[in-house]
Amino acid sequence: MKKILAGVLILSVMLFLVGCLDYKAYDIDDSKDSGLVKGDIVGVEKNTNNEVEGEVVLPTLQENKTASLNEAVSENLPVVNVKENQLVRLKVSAVDPNQDNLTYTYSKPFNDKGTWKTNYGDAGDYVVTVSAFDGKLSTEKKMKVVVEKVNVPPTIALLGDITVNEGELVKVDPKVNDPNHDPVTVTISAPMSKGVWQTTSKDSGIYTIKVTASDGELQTEKSFKVTVKNVNLVPVITNFVDVKAQEGETIKLNPTVADADENEGEKVIVTFSSPFNKEGVWTPGYTDRGTYFVNVTADDQRGGVATKQIKVTVEPVNMPPVIKDVSLETN
Ligand SMILES: [Ca+2]
Ligand SMILES: [Ca+2]
Ligand SMILES: [Ca+2]
Ligand SMILES: [Ca+2]
Image 1: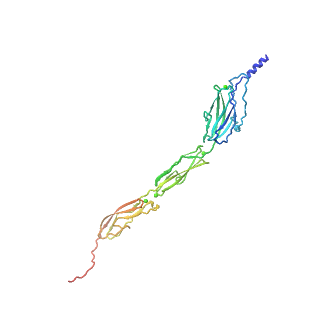
Image 2: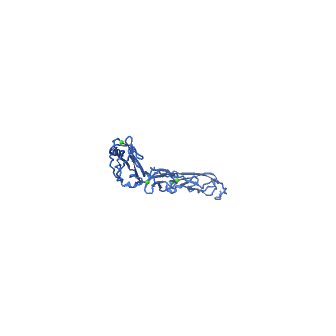
Image 3: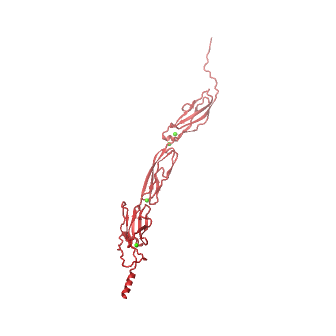
């Protein structure tokens, strides 16, 4: 009787289940540099509702040797550290005591192949779940992937060269991006430091504008050219109005001629129509009474020509006869 009781007891005690997920290895793409912790992570999970009669051999348990395990003591999860932009691959090795075929699933951000191409900006902690499924039962294991930030400088989108005419407004709005999502400070060199530049008639030339984008640690520079084409301004004639004078009175025309391009070595030539001389002077004689339309022309010799016309009225002056000579004539 005792023997029977003991046998039943032993049998009932031995009814238990084992699902076994042996170990998982973390690996990375070989082409990448790695400061990674590589190691085996051991996990065993029991399925309590599947009973197996007879002797059950538990898989050999291995201690987790990853150095970073301690970091996750509070969560009791194995931890691996990777760097942004690395390709991470989860390698799972599991056995099924029944030798069932196993399929694996991985939680996001890993894909269904167990790989994850991290990107800049992905820094953070990720708890990843790996499941092994034998068709009826699945076993899960979690681990923590810590993605460490790798700072990279901001990028600046291509900046095209700009050509404008003098007097036009130049605007630039560089498109910058930081792959780490860091705040970016953009600076632009003079004369475009405000991003806009109102050119004037004195600004012709070629300017190299430098754009700098900084995330506070790293910076990127790009430059582009602004070509400001000279625009010739036409001379402006002022202070030139109708004149009235009398015969015998010297008239001096003295218009004001200005050309904003004179700083460019321009020489403006001013000419007057007849009967004025090239200095703009004329003394009408006593038979010159009448009305004259007189032109003044200002030519900057670069294609800028201005003309203005006035009316010159010469009023008659009656002069007494002049006796030039008296002589006696005798027969
Ligand atoms: Ca099984
Ligand atoms: Ca950055
Ligand atoms: Ca100019
Ligand atoms: Ca001019």
